[in-house]
Image: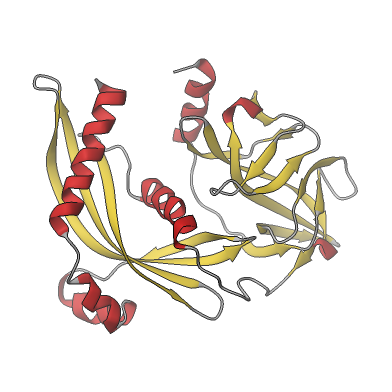
Length: 274
């Protein structure tokens, strides 16, 4: 692991993943500045989903979360000329001048998901147009779903590591969003050096509903829901999951999901831990 990667991982571990922003869409391209009428920092493409922090006179302070190649990060800044993309590699932002990174949200082998911010004039936003026309490409959703589950569920535990596999049950478009229905298998593992194998400590399965909105040809997952445990399980299951989805859940191969999760743990052990 390089020094830059160690730095990024260290910053990532200190991040607090919370936000009180309102979602809007860029009517652009739109230039984003250091302050109202200030120096230009970056430009965001038309139709890109961003978060509004506050309104100052006729200027919005906004932030954008997107992916960037790690080689384009220096001293916690995005270098001039670099580009930011969606998780499916669609360009949505160009860095005009070196831009400070607010937060590093996720780090993979050669990319990082970052948040940057600045000011744009109010006419550069168009409101209430999210997901007017929902067109679903299942293949483009798969990396988005995997990233979300990894970020939400695959977290290092005090006693080991957690890995997640899923079965896509159904995707149902709504008026302004899509609902993605999954059956998720979660396994907690210890790594046993004496026999070179990961050991499954505990596991569980759960139905998960992901709520997503369309973003510039791709989708953004905004939240997830699962049925309540205990006495409220049946009622909440019926409320969150349509009958057609519940019927398909019964056909999920639970053993196959377990095997996939165990293989993930084994691969991680061989590449990272061993």
